[in-house]
Image (cartoon, rainbow, N blue to C red; front, top):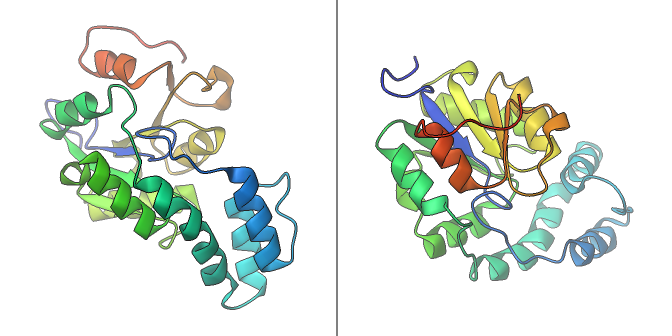
Length: 208
């Protein structure tokens, strides 16, 4: 159930683009995935394409994950927190349960959380090895935290985050300068600091 002192029983966060920005050249990543798989990754969702290939070809998913790990793990060593991230996580950690869902791999996520010193905050961490579908990731994280999908607030930064969050029944807050109010999120904020202010009750969100 929802906390008596906070609006949601748990808050789940995306990692890259939300709490940090990993310095991965995704054009290079697409080229490498194309080389490994023999199928074009140009102009398509990387993780949707991996899921499609994995459904057709046994063992291919692990090869593609390894190719991504080779780019993401070194980048994770230089992860820096998004402005306002630590303050928001510290604020929420005293009020509700926290979880992380990410399309990064488990190795890169582990490194990034160590570098950011964020690991202490999360009671559940779900990576692409667990699922390549955001909706399923959110429901898995919620289950580990012993809450329902409709009891969570999900914080992300992309259109796919809004779609997956709504499918899972979550309240969705998108953050960052690229987030758009027409992507279907419940709330849109220019920054984590503004989300923090809203959750602390001092400001109103823009969005719907």
